Length: 109
Image 1 (cartoon, one colour):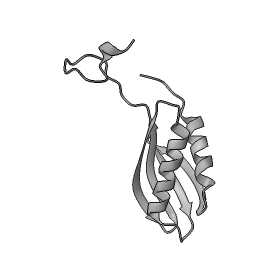
Image 2 (cartoon, rainbow, N blue to C red):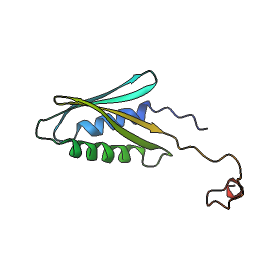
Image 3 (cartoon, helix red, strand yellow):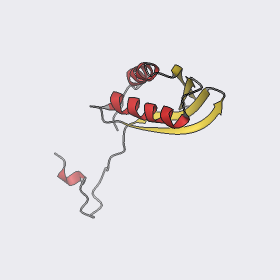
């Protein structure tokens, strides 16, 4: 498994996110090992638009890295929205299962 420091990724992500019009503030907190994203938005910004912005910023910061992101809506309190958002390294196959998979470990060199 690849050990990767995600702190710089999170910093870039928050910086990019707060540059978007309609987002007044954004920060993340890790609670019990799970990262939560807190975003305050302008009243005219919809949740759907915000989620598109989160996706766009996530893609921008993980480009060139072997990372994926996942965002799950948790709750909303007025203009504050909370998401469970994480960046993670995808799991790789460790052995050949014999099913002639495209990503077979025998084909890696």
